[in-house]
Image 1 (cartoon, helix red, strand yellow):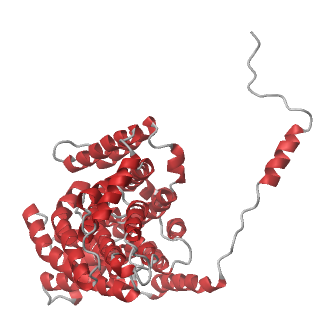
Image 2 (image 1 turned 120 degrees about the vertical axis):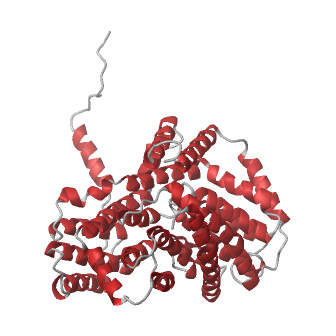
Image 3 (image 1 turned 90 degrees about the vertical axis):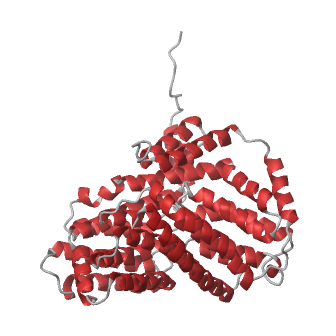
Length: 502
């Protein structure tokens, strides 16, 4: 039996031809240097760092390297607001500088990438990609529309409940709202001849405005509702209050469903649709489901994994001690082994790796600041300034300021970084219940994203559809914000009292 050849021989000169063809076929990618118009933003970041490191008086209890670390952290926040370069690249720069200037060994600076909450987000993104690719997420949305979509309000509730279900495991509100909800929403609008412009008010304006507000609410309801939620949970854990998927779900489900129910009613009062009854929407969903056919093998496997992971998360810490990150990774492994999710899918999930870089870096930077004693110094100084105010008054004022400060932010992440740790430290130092503060500021920042057309990642996407004018968007955002503050500040706080959170 002849020996098996693994490499076929090439004629003389063939290797050179192969190399030459590779070089000539690989065109250099066009690159663009940072535009001169963006350079001033780097100037602002440098000014922030040098002001803190050199001009701001350093407390005796904080070492020089800890103070320089504060400068890096505040410059990073400014960078996430100004965006001179993408957020992931900016955080990678900050992580590197924390080792060069902030007194951290490189092994310490990179510790955030080994944090279990970071890998929980990574695993959830993998599962979310499988949900979208397999069509199961779209099937869930169509099922809701078929059941409840016989009125304009019912269509809104159908798509809102879809986002609630998917938010339990998909940490990207952009992937949920853009990849699943938006195509169906646009199709239903077109079904009634409601297009951007003169016909938007038939049904499109109402649906786009109300569904977007519901997306912000569902982002607030779950640990995995929005990519920055685990970051807030990490800051809470640093302060001594661990937040799990199950505890966040328990805290968010009752006030969240109340807000999901009330927000579209507020929108309907201010932007009433011309069409109230929508039997065609239900028929459209029925037709689409029929064309999709029966559940595929991939969808069945994914449904089992989805339900199993969620149930295991809910019961973690009560019925068993399996870590929620381990559960999510097991779910990913099952999907990879079964072929429902491919490694190419994982490699091509750009948002996953972007979030991995910035989230892992920020986790460590926040923890390092706490270890350096910076947050404690800030809390003591502010508490001393407001020594005559009780914690209740300070809590209410701080929460309202924190909420409406989102007018100045185009990113929930930047908002959390800038305001969550200091407000948490100050209020706890004044005697406010740690659980109440931790959950309030983690959840309300998501609700605040509904204020503007740039408040979180899906907002520019929905605003760009041109169904809602900027004036109407801001009007609805403010009106729904009052509704959300009322619901979460009464029903929510009372529910948390029942749960023993405070």
